[in-house]
Length: 359
Length: 278
Image (cartoon, rainbow over all chains, first blue to last red; front, side, top):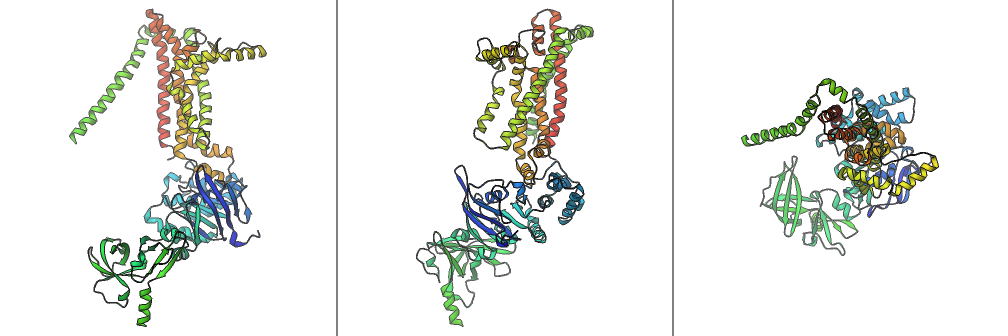
């Protein structure tokens, strides 16, 4: 295959409509070989449709789909070289773990000896060697996911597609399973694309994230880029614990910019100090009143009112304790200013001049 | 707590009383009455040519109904459960029509179509002339089969579509993605999912076919050739003589025994349907 590695999986000018509902409106992306990519977006944003079109379970009304350098629009699902992990795993409930994993190879009439060798190899990879005679009903959620993963990999696909792979997993074991899945995918080197609505999952698992909204792709980039340099107001508002505020020019250190009607603030943009605390940025702070305090295990989450604005802040619990009704100093480091289509980051100007002064 | 216990026991008692009074008691009466004139009479009553012919036809009609309704139900459920098309909901409603329409009306409808004044009669007539045969529908065996099929049509469909809706399409999609052919998907994935539901539908269908009276009565008038067991029982009972009534009970007891057999099978299958997928 002589395709460029940066275009291992691609969609170009994809449109798809279900009745009156436009699931895809001009979707374009390129994915490099060996990457783990997340399709991230709210429900109904069209991310699952993209995955199902890649698999061949749905067909685009318009546009081209490429897998491993080949246009696959008219190629049946089974010949596209993909492995698919369904949201609820879709394990064959009347077959054992072994038969589930062997299914793809069996229907392709491979040599039984070779099938057995491959299945045992995969059972080993996913750490379920001792459970090969169990039925799916006798497994835990995490074990089922591993079987589904092994079953998808068995026929040696070029691309692995996963639909909300952690939706059916206990919160407790999610983190551990994500790490395991990421390590195992990297070990097998397979290009993988997964759908999720959970940004934490996307950030933790993916090399690159494609953010979808309303049938379009808002942005594609590394988790750092998506998080720190959002390309659209939607992405800025979707990632992190974002909160929108109007009249941001009333905050110390920020000026109104033409066309940018509102701003987005995240808890990590904010530091909170006791009213009497002495620090070098006093000229850049706002006076605020604590309206709510919530203990969140490792952090203290606070809602603070500054005039007309209500913002969220987070503090490590080791830092000073705060109470509802208390007046505090609030330092806002930066904001995302938003117009209808654009977003850009601005720093607190008072802070910059203050720093100059102290240097 | 005490009050809810009282409610619980009263409701359970009421349930049992109702079942005993309305079902068990009458059925036991049938069996007891059938033996009113002794064992010899009972044997004789159920081996008359009329009863034997009726029993045979009933079993054949049930078999035909199970085959046709079973195959139809399976195909219809598969197409509705696995494909999206316009008019799906309408088709589902239509298939349920036999549940809500009186069987006698169904029988009469077939008379209106295939009887001497019906539009189907001419077609049938010219077909007979062309083939040199003398097929008839009304007041003949095909009419009996048609009527039985009509009333049993929804059973298998209902059971299978229920299972298909709860199981969804993902397992089939997974199999297709791995390169399984349509036949492989059906036999390896779909059929194992629906087999107990299918069997349950078949048993319901058979039970309904054995007991059907109204629709068949409209289309069957020849005792000894086109009468099914329920019709024969009615004829015996209507004869009015004391022996006739006892003979009617004897023939009824045969039907009751068949139904109980089906009931036992049904209970077993129901148990399996409930545990399908475990």
